[in-house]
Image (cartoon, rainbow, N blue to C red; front, side):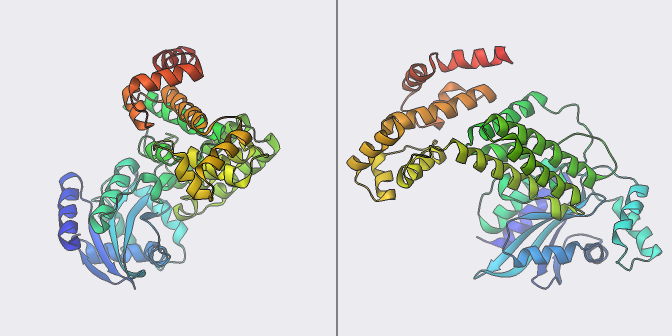
Length: 403
């Protein structure tokens, strides 16, 4: 892959929509190239505001694409190039604002940087330069960073693979055109997965990050907005976990811990990973509660594999190889411990996933059948009816009426 050529094309594409600039640094933070007309000055701002040092630390840790930002909503997106697992270069996009901001807000934001030696003249020049910096919504900026990573590495990532997530998303004004019904359906999917202890949550979480920008409260403090979104998200996940079987004592204690961590955060860098860590923690605790304590380790391992690979064809012989059993012994032991034959257990697990998707998404039945690797829509409908007692279409209609 020609990185220079792809990066040049990426720069052209960015300039078609916004004045978002790209920057290349070596592993020590020396600026190698930028297409920004205020390159030297904004590079200084990148350093003075503490973002370059943090970015280099992230790069040395071998991280995925991330974003760093200031207390007043100025954001840079980061991606990294490695040579033989050694941090070599850093590619940066930005800066952008996550929301519309006034000069007074920016001046107030400088109170967080008392350690930086910022002269009054330099501050005024920076404020004037900020007038040329675009405002870019979190969802769009996330996509730009995913595009950048693909151009640099050829690797396609989901939104949940980046560490942007809700950390920079939460200060945009309310948009009347937000698809609230779609957001609500996505939220239901996420909460259903918590209730079921469904470890196969990555795609749903990734989709949610590209649909909703968090709690749409209009305020002047983007860090406060980020904290609010994390606290609200933690609260509803906590209650879903209780419905899934986690004790109120354990759930509220865990939730309080994550909410306090969010409240204590002083920067976006501190808060950015909390939502995903919290969500994963709750799901795994509910999943553990739902585990049959009588299951042997090999059968529990097979069951977890099934739950994590419902969008694939699952064969007993493959799992027998996984746990070191013969196929005959595995299927005999599986039914003995779970009460269902191996094939019936797989069907039931797939249908449970289908119920969640039918209830919370608009995916057509044919597409859902293909997604869960049924041989045909008719076969999917027949199995669904045998287990649930009605067709997938009837189940979706009833679910919509109930809500």
